[in-house]
Length: 376
Ligand SMILES: C[S@@+](CC[C@H](N)C(=O)[O-])C[C@H]1O[C@@H](n2cnc3c(N)ncnc32)[C@H](O)[C@@H]1O
Image (cartoon, rainbow, N blue to C red; front, side, top):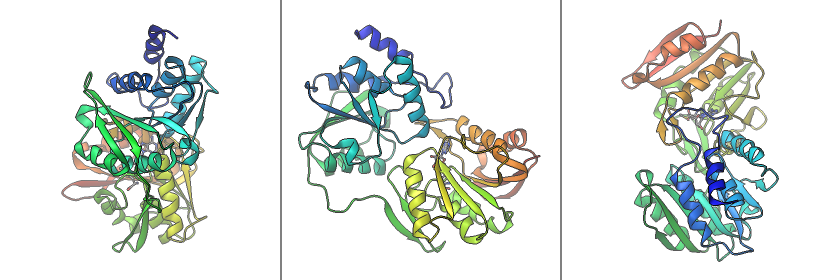
């Protein structure tokens, strides 16, 4: 493909099925800079792995623009995986990449790894460990991000795993950090982190990308204080489960309930599975990787618990929460309840009324509001 054709491919990428909006894009200057930097480092036989591709720009850009024959890909988000498949099909590049967990299969023999830097240092830590542990000894990791979202802490994390860490000059407000010479990895995998939460009497397991790590979020803590007012449901869902604390607590308090925990993040799903198992709930809490319960039957849940996200990627965007309210409206059975906790300034009540049904405020503290919405 010519440079113009690659540019046309990038411009034609779609975010679907992720939330779409004018200020949200399917690729950014970091993708372009990572691809340009990679072009100088590729040999004819270099194996390429891509981590954190948002909607396929890195994978498809490497295949179409850099002449790479086959790419191994790891994406945390369910929506990102669907978007990559969809964009690959439109570009006629399906079958040219394979999807993997963050593991040896993804990285073995990889000489070049392209990474869109994640938001959290813990997520970067888990990725850097995997690259240093599993990739080829001569592997080069190109980690790119928007300058405003990058911190010196990222360099420090990379320096724990690589002997050479060199931030490059910024271009169009993006920067690439080049890491080489992987250090010897510690014998034990650093993730998932396992912590006991004495205040709840449970153990929590967290992979790097899981919301709030192995700690209890203060919004979640507040929602949990309403547990004994919630109905005893036969089918309950922890929507956007993160490490699965809500699912675990509900399953422990309601031994007859079938509890499903679901999240768009693979790291959250792996964490929630590990948390359920650590609390003796294997087989009692089912954990599903999905986008907004897209694979759930309509009218199948009597209760949904939700501490909604308020970020889409790096931007604060109400669309992420609204999407989950709409999903809850579809999946709740008539008479079923959605219990939500949110920052009081967000004023979600009108949207909950509109999408689900009658909504009452069950409680409010200086920071958070908890509502119960009844599906009519
Ligand atoms: C504020 S966190 C709450 C995590 C967990 N329930 C807790 O209380 O600690 C929101 C979670 O929603 C997930 N999420 C965001 N959008 C989602 C979507 N469209 N489908 C499924 N999960 C989603 C995020 O990955 C994140 O784990």
